[in-house]
Length: 175
Image (cartoon, rainbow, N blue to C red; front, side, top):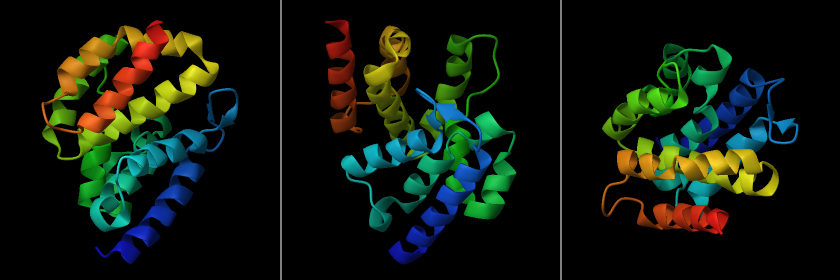
C-alpha cells in the first residue's frame, strides 16, 4: 500500500479500536484509546512511519482488540488485511491459568511474525511509561518480569534502541 493508503487505513483502525474498546478504561480512568495512541507514539518515536511501517502502526491501534473485546482475528483480517491480522494474532495472549503461562505460550508466536516483537516492545514501553506515572503496582510487575520478557523476545541486533530505552525505564524503577 502507498503511504496515503496506510494513512487512511490507520484512521479507520483508530475509529474501529476506539469503538471496540468503548467503555474500557486505561490507567486512572482514561479512555482505552490513550494506551493505543501511546503505542503508536512509541513506534513513531523509534522511527516507524506510514512509508515504512504502515501495517505496524495500524496494528498498534488493534493489538488488544482480539484479547480484550471478543472480536477475532478473522474480523481483523477482513477489515485490515493479512499483515495487520498476523501482527495482532502474534501479540494476542494465548489462554493459560497464569500471566506467566500465557506469556510462555504467546511469546514463541510473537517471535514467529516479522515485526511482532517490535509491536510488543512498543506496547511494553507504553505500559511501563504509563505505570511510572500512575501505577507503581504495575511498574513492579513489569520490572519483576523484565528478565523473562527480554529472554523470550530479544535477539542481538534487533530493536536495540527500543530495548535500551525499556532497560533504562526498568533500571530507574529499581532505584
